Amino acid sequence: MPLKFVQGQPTSMMCMVEKTEKQKMLAGELYIASDPELAAESKRARRLLRMYNATTESEQELRAHILIELFAKVESLVEIVPPFHCDYGSNIYVGNQLYMNYGCVILDGNPVNIGENVKCGPYVQIYTAYHPIEPEIRLSGRELAAPVKIGNNVWIGGGAIICPGVTIGDNTTIGAGSVVTKDIPANVVAAGNPCRIIRHLP
Image 1 (spheres, rainbow, N blue to C red):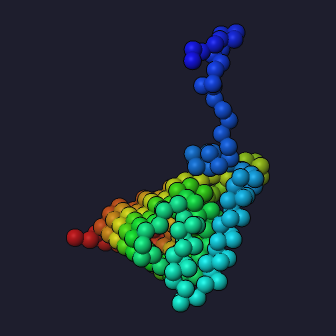
Image 2: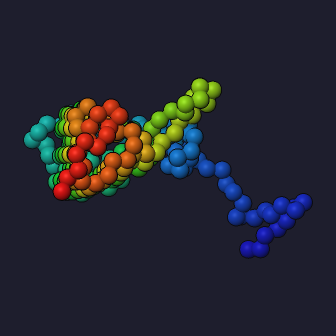
Image 3: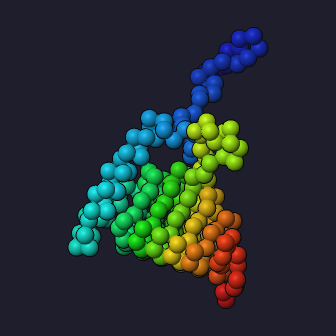
């Protein structure tokens, strides 16, 4: 359809439509988490998590079905030991043979991609969500989120925190209690706060 011009400005169906809060969130822009659409998705996640965290070790099939409904993508042979918590679940993509021990948390305001054969110790926390540094923006209730990517064959020690926007390369080990604020490459051992490379693997 050809563009129409009004006082020198093009108008048509191609004109910009304002993004939803969810679209802003996934685009890494400031968004309002209390938006009704996001609130409904969070409520859905809490319902599924309540069911999941109430399961017993003999209900592995039920756990698998709940994770399929909760996550955007989940492969087979995934074990997440309750209790587990996340914001939405719908932005979590999980490969084969993920193991997460007790008390892990994923704040998935932006995609979290977890590769194959990833092992997480107890209370590992993966954050995509964060708040603006400027207090006047923070007080407006707007938040931000940046994606996290964890490669294949990664081991993350207990209590480690993976911060927004971080990528961890294949075959890497993150020491217990580390705070990972920047990308960590493949084939290294890294630890500390902030997390730093302490050894390169062959």
